[in-house]
Image 1 (cartoon, rainbow, N blue to C red):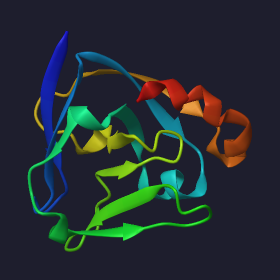
Image 2 (tube, rainbow, N blue to C red; image 1 turned 90 degrees about the vertical axis):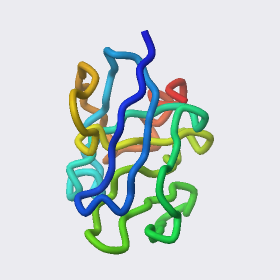
Image 3 (cartoon, one colour; image 1 turned 180 degrees about the horizontal axis):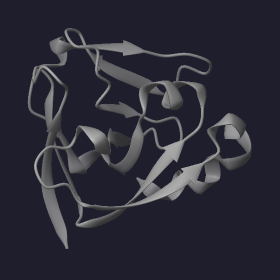
Image 4 (cartoon, one colour; image 1 turned 90 degrees about the horizontal axis):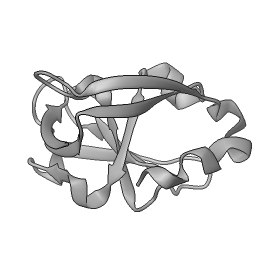
Length: 126
């Protein structure tokens, strides 16, 4: 059953809604950026994500191929969502940034240190 969850950054200047199942698989990636930010990937199609605040509150960071768009709050620096390279037509929400009662998570480890070998395992998510 689908449900809409609210989330955002620490200072609340970035807020969003994401619609997903009440039981979801999230990925804990070991790549350099995900390890440092503690990101738990909840990947959804773009039409299941709604930014409720202004894009002016966000900066974007890219690296390597510049396909992934890592958005973070201009004020508190939290990266609560981004456009992933594995699913450029989707959104990866940081499940740790959901507020209230979050969906039930099943956490899978993802080997992002060898991204090229394993990216196909994420392609079906959005």
